[in-house]
Length: 180
Image 1 (cartoon, rainbow, N blue to C red):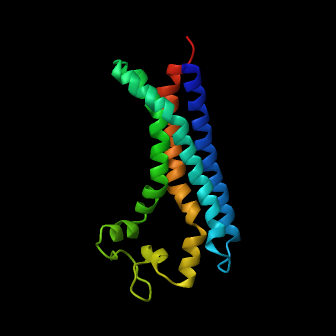
Image 2 (image 1 turned 90 degrees about the horizontal axis):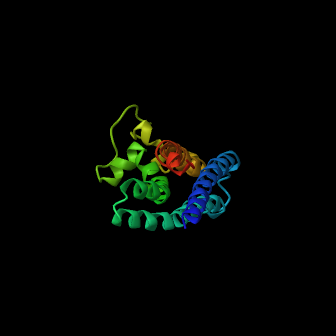
Image 3 (image 1 turned 180 degrees about the vertical axis):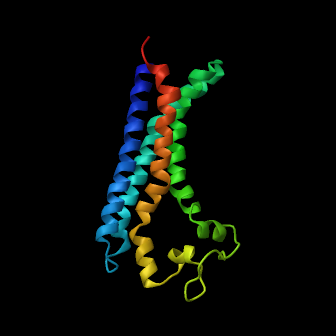
């Protein structure tokens, strides 16, 4: 059973890495070739594929989550935590990709909290703060915001969380799986 869990954990990590790499690659391509006259759904497919990769990694980590809970029930705390990482990591990546990436934009945070548009820094000609320019609905800013949307999600959340996930695996989890 542990051999199967190790294989599923390995595949979960591989799928997660491939999803982030695909997100960076396809986000870069979209940013380069984006045309405003093309339907947005065309550009949404790579985002859906990236999100599917995260969801698949979560599903592959689910048996490790259950095994980790079972280890907790049997008071094997260290083993339980090490098994939970293979489920919790992809879950954090999935929610981080959508949630954290939007909350890293200052205007997105203050608008979500209902505080209105912040009054930070230089102002554009219409009085909107410069840092909030992507949220202004003009054809130019809409194209910039749409063009870099997937790249924004992947670079602000996917890549940093993946690096953190790999550090946790390397430091705390993988040494436990090495044969004696």
